[in-house]
Length: 207
Image (cartoon, rainbow, N blue to C red):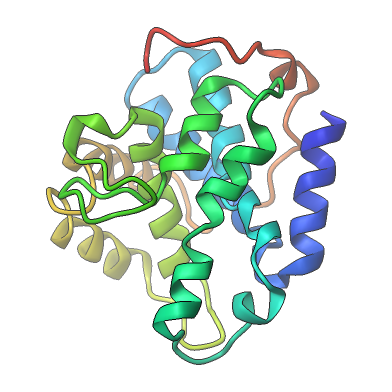
């Protein structure tokens, strides 16, 4: 637990935008997991995955993270290394495998045009497909330096327009069902339970 807490605190100090972003992505990931009727331990691991998904941005220069305008091609390439940086941080730790693979692959796309490995379709681990949708939801419904937040209906419409190419349709559908019953953005959540961090990172049957 101390490792995860320290990593999240360091990321929040480096990039103020991430204050709350990881927590909300974790909550959205868990909502999707519940909607898909995953086991409780898998839902808990998904919440941790969302919380940690951008932890690799610790390895990206702060100026790039806070840049108000568009990135150059070289700058974009630097930022796109963050999934690998994040995986390096959690690899070999007690962080569950569900969370580790989501950290590494949450920017893959179903059409194979994502990064870091260009995986496509069902070759993308299911936790990463869930965190990708949760991440996109919070990104679109949060105000950033270069644009205002979108409404939840507008964000869902954008997710649906990209399902099948970028996002898993079953995950988008699960999120839409969950948001019909739960407010977004959500109220601040309770800290993750310490027991979650004790889950061994062995390979899961779901991967």
